[in-house]
Length: 407
Ligand SMILES: [Fe+2]
Ligand SMILES: [Fe+2]
View 1 (cartoon, rainbow, N blue to C red):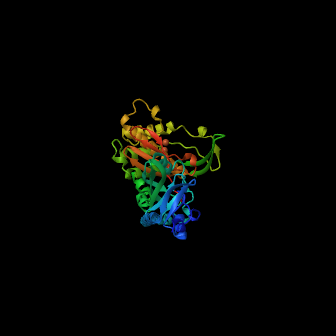
View 2: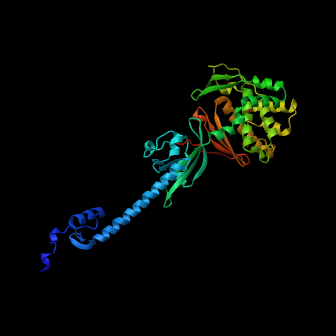
């Protein structure tokens, strides 16, 4: 007997190519029952494939798949179990991961959000973009949401070979803690009463309560303003709001700074606008502010005179009140250097109080050493300006507004 009587003829042997997938090869083995198959490339024999190699290969693949699945299952359990909201976005801002806490905190379904684009509602730059660009994480970014809640958000870059491929945001609701912090500021009535006690006498109170402040809209074409609201006791409200801002800064540690005196500042705030003479306007009236309002230097000088001669305030208070509208470059050469940090603080507090009194602004302050971080939001975005002021150097840097993460 010769081999040819037993062999499988060449035409009946199915061929594999080096590119054939293992599962296809597997079914060929089952169909043909052959223990080994030839591998051809461009009609040339380039190798042979024994069944046992296929079995070993598929078993290994199955085991590693099982490990991978288990790992994925485990990391998904970890992801779901953490109490902080977690959203992972890729570099095209597409949401890739959205855990259960995120669903609860943001009231959205992960199944709807994953795969769709993240909505980053923020004016200016969101930390997401910054982290994408720099590859450096940002932690504990205070983020007020449009519904009034406040979240603390971490932004951590996902790196692959040194390149940022996405950002992981984790966040928690800290509204309760923040509310506790601002409780002092919220109890306005108590503060009002406490403030009345700090006033030198009823004449000062009377003057403040009868100095109006106005809300208006400005027409850039004509340069005129139209009065929209008269705040009859605006002078009083302005001082109370300034003291509120100062109390907030005090809470955050500003008074521990060298050269910052609470007493001097409180007195300066009480007296700074006492010499103000306001025009009388009615709602709906249109006016040219340059004609109608006295130059600010004038009331600053008058207020300083009142503080000095009728109330014998100390020299520091007088300096601060007299120059609270001057640019730093316009200060006289004998202006005491040691008062500059307090002058900067007074001007900051004055401006913020004006925003609170006349524009219903929302303000958030943070103190970091000699720097004050100011996040200011107004109904009219033109006035929005977030900045960091260094009280010692006078340097002012504009900063991005606090972010609002996707909601
Ligand atoms: Fe003033
Ligand atoms: Fe003022």
